[in-house]
Image (cartoon, rainbow, N blue to C red):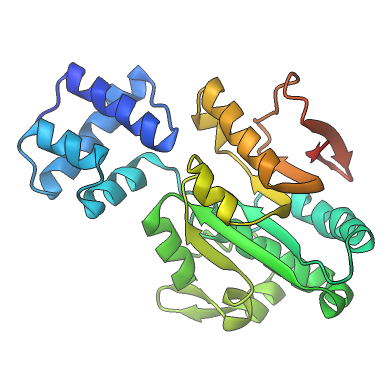
Amino acid sequence: MKLDKRQLTRLRDLIQEKTGVFISNEKLESTYKRKLEEIAKKNGYCDFERFYLDIAKKRNQKLYCDIVSAITINETYFFRESHQFEDLVKHIIPELHKKRHPEDTISILSAPCSTGEEIYSIAIYIMEECEEILKKRNFLLLGIDIDKKAIERAKRGIFSARSVHKLPDHIKEKYFMKTADGYMAKSILKNAVNLEITNVFDEKRMKKLGRFDVIFSRNMLIYFNEQDQLKVLEIFNDLLKRDGYLFLGHAEKVPPHLTCFTPIKIGTSYAYQKR
């Protein structure tokens, strides 16, 4: 099935409606036309309307998963932008430990978590740097992503040499086993995190996740238009506990007119604190 410009535009608008990801005209023609045609062929589609409606109504879960995987970026690695993790364990977690009730769980959300490197990195930093606090308080580390295939990879916990290239040797030896396929996360690491398939635009589902002290959402907003960025930020605000923190990617900012967040410098990092 070959897609014409009108069909591509309809699919682009549908993908944005379902995922929030906006695809520019340039990328639509240069990259995604070929990807979408390949997905249609692989799933046995010759008729555009059936292809479109099966995506719109999620009548074919495999097709929908293939579409989501094609338009989401899952290239990441352990300890990426590690200064934020360092400031999390040196400043934020000790502060939360003092402020929160002794029986409260410190909850951290990674959204999106892609194939798991970010939420596992947070777990390693906490286990390495917050040993005394871990003895006294429970932690909940949750990673969510819209891409079912990414979550399945995160749960398998097998990572390439590139994914772990920033890890010191003693960390690799402590938390991973070298295998023929790469590096497999040990149980101590896999058991420290929870992973779920969730669309950040699904407000009902997001609320069911609970409340969080810290949210990491790095390099997701850059793929959304301004309206969808604001919607996600408002959802994050609802999910954060009082005085909770939001970490974004280096190219992302909360608009100044969104007054529910206060920009704040923590150590060497910049974050946003819920007002």
